[in-house]
Every structure is written in structure tokens, then in C-alpha cells.
Image (cartoon, rainbow, N blue to C red; front, side):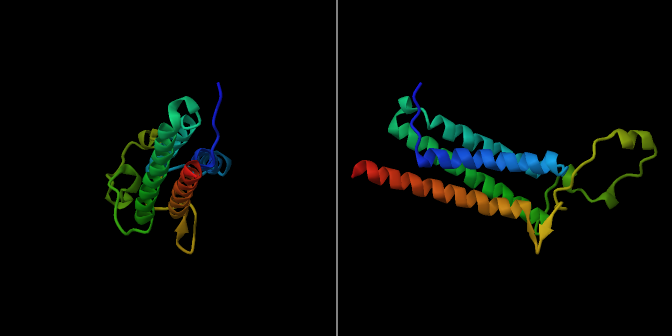
Length: 165
């Protein structure tokens, strides 16, 4: 099986791999448990990687290659939207109605402490584990995903121009 490797295919593929590798390193290497929104952001990144991997197969043709690369770029943009929403939840610009952002002062009094201790720890979406001057991992993910998407589309446009020349 022969693969056609183009820069526009490699960019989202490598970027997807890198993003997931960083997320897993932060999760397992640093011990930071991801919240619900963090986990949701991984889905379109994985789908972008799959679309980019599919674009490497030349039997699909040039049009299919270009469509799959654009789909990968759109998945990165979708991740940027989710990450922007997550950054807004972290900054308390808006709320995310879920168990990960519920206010502990409004919870019921727990009588059975053994039952409470057997429940999994819920990581709050509105309390980032790390921030520097208001910049959180979610806001860095916005910039990363927008940059990857723009560079991918730029590379694809450059490749299309070379094909026509």
C-alpha cells in the first residue's frame, strides 16, 4: 500500500498526535484529572487525526484528499470553539450546567459518609488546575487549534496552487 504524504496531511496528523500526547502526559504524568469539557475537547482532535490519516491514502484521489484535509482543519476549529467555551467557564464568563461545575454549597447534606467516599471525585470545569495571568490550558488549546487549522488550510492552498502550475 502506497501513501502520498503531503504537508497539508501531515500537519493535522502530527498536531493531533501531539495534542493527545500532551493531554495524556498532563493527565498521567502530572496527575491532573481532566474535567468533562477537557475530555470533550479530545474527541474532535482524534477525529481530525483520523481524517488526516485517511487523506494519506492516494487511491481516494486528489479531491478526497483535499476534502479530508479540510475536514481535519474543521475538526480543529471545532475543538477551538469547545476550548473557548471551556476557557469562558473557567473565567466564570458563563456557566456549564453539569456535575463538574456545580456549586458545592448547594449540595445536600450527606449522612452516609461511606457512600460519599465511594463516589468518584468530580473534577470541576470552572476551576483550572493551572493558570498563568489568566491563561489556562483551555485558552492555550484555543490558540493551538486555531493555528493548526489556519496552517493546514494555508498548506493545502499552497499545494493546490502548485498542482495548477
